[in-house]
Image 1 (cartoon, one colour):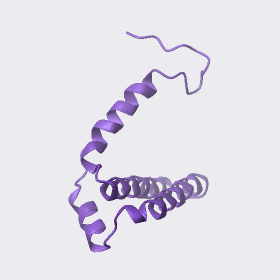
Image 2: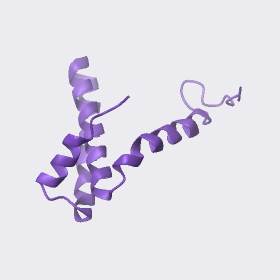
Image 3: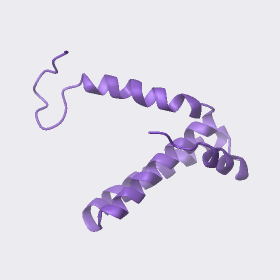
Length: 99
């Protein structure tokens, strides 16, 4: 998946955001995640998708503020590799087998 980073960079620049805004941006991320939960319970798939996109946007803004937006795709891939090794999901007690 590729997402155009330019609008994120423009947003951060336009609002003159920097490291001092990290805490505020983390709060934005929490709020957007809460809105995903509400959308799952009360609304249709479109609302869930829009709220999930807001979570991704808020995360990308935090990454741009911190100067690691360009590292985000590899970080996500690395974390997913780690997650594939964890026993989670419907059968969390089962060991994950390596191929």
